[in-house]
Image 1 (cartoon, rainbow, N blue to C red):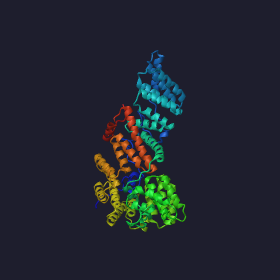
Image 2 (cartoon, rainbow, N blue to C red):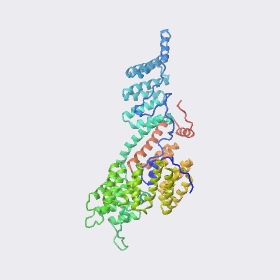
Image 3 (cartoon, helix red, strand yellow):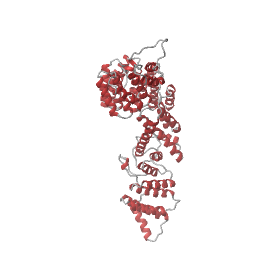
Image 4 (cartoon, rainbow, N blue to C red):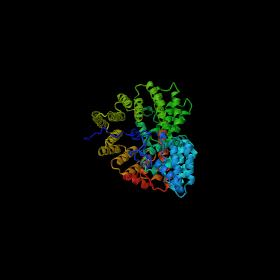
Length: 590
């Protein structure tokens, strides 16, 4: 197969990588309906370009700043007896206030802005909006947040599309931890600035992460456990090389035997993909008497595994803890309790505990390939590519015939060759990929990973061929379909085809969180915000990890904020999105 390899290929996001590895850690495609991350940072209302600095240290400029010579002219006119109009007099006070503000005399600036507000005829709405906004700037420097909010609100009553007033009020809301109100205001700023100000966008992203974090903590406490789909469980179980729950031999009852119960019933349900029966059957084994319970430790490991897959982390940890507290338990079962508890800790963003459990599992059995394979996948997700490759190599040394471990090792080598900028190594890796496919022609992961690498290299037609081969092996694998949808967007920009594929993924697996999230993100890009919110709400039902919940809540909150703001401002988000896609984005708002 002839191809041109691109050593400067764009680095995959954790979101794409999670798809590849079949893990639920995810980062999505985007947050707002329109974002132009390549746009240069610009000042607001004619300010000079700002340096990239922390938002907290950036001040919002005053409006209506006049040169000192204009003030001198007005003063000379007054000395000659010329009567100034109320508006000119108000603007003189404003200019005096601006001078005080620039010199750090914020209390004196407020006095002058008071006079400007009192003197200005109320029909001069733009001027009134500026006076209130400038006074809010002085209150902000004094950290009088309630006053900042009051003045920004007054400013917006005179000019409902005043981006700077929304931005300042957003900062006041953030300072007082009113994050939902903050999100609405910073979203309004983004929309009014046509998503052209990177400083505002970074502020919005920070606020979204915080609202997502708060909502996720609540969501984790209140979430209802849901048994995952057969495809999800199959992807998980296939990632293990020697899991005793899959390799152990248990008695097969004959038709004349009494109905199975306890662990034997659970194991039978596992083999027949009747996953709803597993936890109750394991509980029956665990709660039976010592004389009756032949497989109590196995039942704890299986129940803990399914609590983990259902997202019931407290219950899962209790089961794994019970095994690890039992010094008489089979060492191999204890090793897998450590391995699976490690995954649990990683899901809960307790990285150090997770890695420590892998170390304990290795200590119990240094020749267990799953210790290294599972740890390698986690390290790859954590962007620790070189250590991940070392772990994959250990797994393959112990289990050379495990196709998934081998092809994931190839993928780690690919990532490392990109980081090193080593063209010769990259070409060698691609040959190794092909050898893995030739050796394991029935392994779907070989084709899907090769397709992802080719897509990453912008070799889209070849990638499509490999996706088609993977789909023949696993026609109901939703992750494959989602992957193809993403590639269609990258390759052809064909949104309609991508939407069809994502709907197909949901059809084959109605519990596929990734499909709902990705389709929701596409709908955001199409400015179909209400539909996007519905899809994100669906994704939240099936999200498993803390990081996943934070991310999806952030996406949902962004869409809800855009709905709120566009309704309040009377803005059609479709027109804003169309302007963004065409590149016709004005540098300011009239």
